[in-house]
Image (cartoon, rainbow, N blue to C red; front, side, top):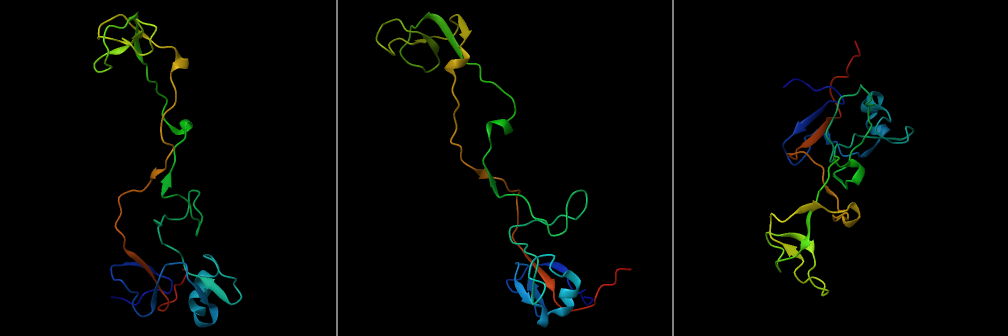
Length: 172
């Protein structure tokens, strides 16, 4: 394999970074010990620029090429998200009910119906096929647990490593 460029990032399947390489985990490094790499990336990924600079942090990140609104070293995105009502597609749930009096006790295979007694819940359902009409909108309420869900594509965890030494890349 050819000698790497200083600052070159590669995928690596090992559980250690080879000699001359470091994991891309956002570590803060002393400029005095890594001046060649600092001359290439500066404080793009962090550090004070006087005595320290940072490596890119690829932990829980997928790389994307700069351009079209993406700025070098910019991070964005979340691993889980809680949807709001405004983010859900427009839809409705039209409940079906009967204006006739109820004629069965169980809601199984039945529709909501007008009660046939002053006792709440008694005979409140009608068998299917009995004069069905839509319910009033005020009778419908929101449901859901308002909990976040995973927002991640399928993945394979593998390490990103960056070369500390090698050929200094020429811009031309």
